[in-house]
Image (cartoon, rainbow, N blue to C red; front, side, top):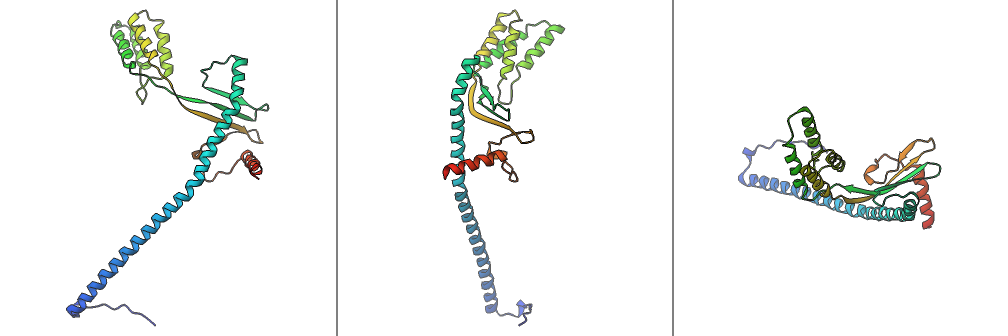
Length: 243
């Protein structure tokens, strides 16, 4: 049965017929809005279900990463102690690097340090700047002022870099001025480095001798990446242990 689109001449309709059309249009619009609302509610439910389903394996991954990290640090604890005793390594050492006998695997463990200064930093800087105003205006003193100003430049967080503090300390030993030296001491003593996190870095060589970094961060993997032979072997061993 064929259906044809007919044009309705509204001027030929009675008021009652027009009222019927208006009511039908309102009901049609209401139905469309309800359909859109229902679809959006369905979408939100799908999002919620997907989030819930994804959360469980991510929690498992997080726990596994933490357990492996603790395991690695525990494994190397006695090794680090032995290294300290045999080689006289300072306790303040921030990292330790170990390699397999054939050199195919290297594991580096340690802690990151966030550079930080207390509120006395500004006092030390002011003392140093006061000294610079006393310098004679010749080529040599101008070069010294430029050097000091470069060392006093702060980073984006408003702190000096630790290596610059060391350079300032060396500079103080060459400048015969007590106020300047005291300013440098204040800056040096205001340095309060803080441990931010422990880290593990792993490198390995493939069958062709090419070195690779083993990705240990979820963001380090591309969706197109495939597990390395080594990680596949590890996964297989873990599956056997679970059985």
